[in-house]
Image (cartoon, rainbow, N blue to C red; front, side, top):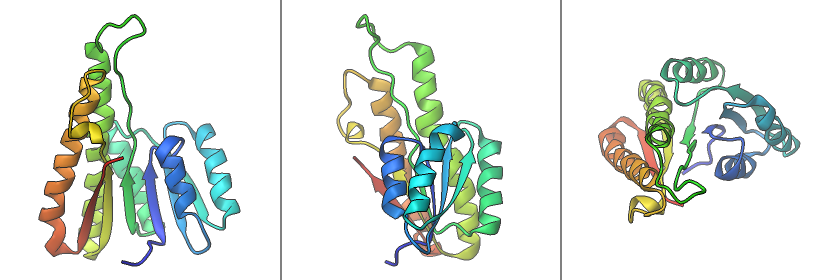
Length: 184
């Protein structure tokens, strides 16, 4: 498989997302770095530019379906996306006093981890299917395989993401769109 020259990464402002951005950065590569906070994205973008990549900072919230659709479509018009990495995620877990995660925390985890993936992947799939090429990578977790008592909502959201990615792989294979499920 050829190394993609246009890569979009959600959750690019820290952790795995920023490491992926730096890993893909280089001459001849265009990166679309998506996050909610442009100020947090800028240092990552600067590092990637220093490595020779062209970088666009795309401020968007993966929990907002229409904003993600517009962001991805607008970026794709200028730079047809070769690889979308749906990486944005949050965790909740127990509170400092040891209480289980609240209902509000559970909802936040699912809005970001599951619906954020769907809001990112769906528009990218439409674009890639039309070209009959591209790759989608969804970031799951080993917590999907064995739920963690400290963070049940996170575990369940990542199990849903991994199952979705695996099913999507089969449904898009004949259309030239590859799907990878990454389980750090």
